[in-house]
Length: 142
Image (cartoon, rainbow, N blue to C red; front, side):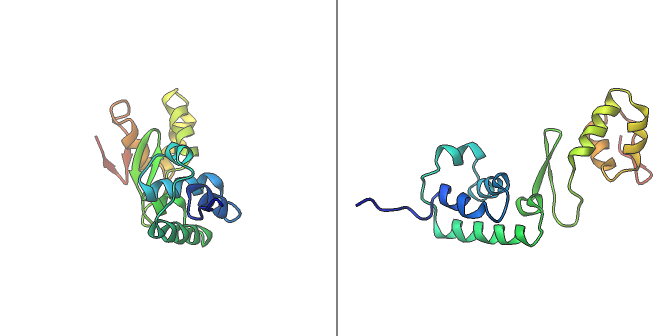
């Protein structure tokens, strides 16, 4: 008789999916294991330690309570760069990336709007060489 593995990547993701988004489950488990998401797909039958399972369950529970995934992992990708985030900072949003793209393409409205948005600090750090005039909180960054 074949032994059924209970604590595998596949079963943890499947158990989490009714509660949280599949992509979020992959991100959380990959973070806990310190592996890329592709690793999880290639090793979906690997058995995981009890500590990993407990940590993953805790992260899923925290996500269900409304904690954003970037706060759980401690970082957020923004324009191909990773920024450290925690509950004390705002999470970079995809809409801010759109504003930056429009600004870099010369859309004056997008430039003005992004100066007043919460993404202005990230904006100033994204391309300070091409936009040395950009300021945040009345302080020049460059």
